[in-house]
Image 1 (cartoon, rainbow, N blue to C red):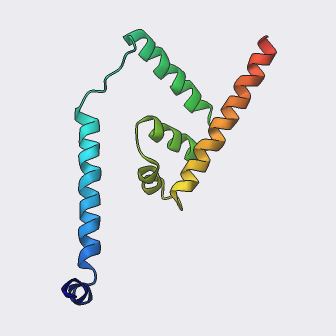
Image 2: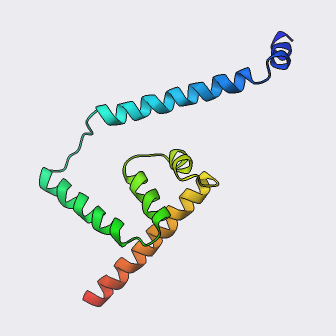
Image 3: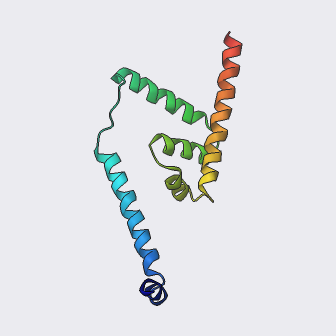
Length: 117
């Protein structure tokens, strides 16, 4: 009963609290990503070649929004964070962008493989 009365007396306080908690979690995640080195099993040469291949792939993407979404995904951002950064309508919109790019890239790779083989 007391909780309900407080909610009526202070309607936006809980929303503010939840928003502040989410901002705190997000900032801690970003801080961990920045300052903790990522552990990898790849050699330096393999990692550099992989990064170069990704950069080549990114430059092949014509749509700037898709390019940004893919780059942010590769940098470890969640779809919710990408939605905020790109000002998209929903997380599903970001998911759809990445899905369409992935299927298009797979089709192109199959075509190139068939032409070579």
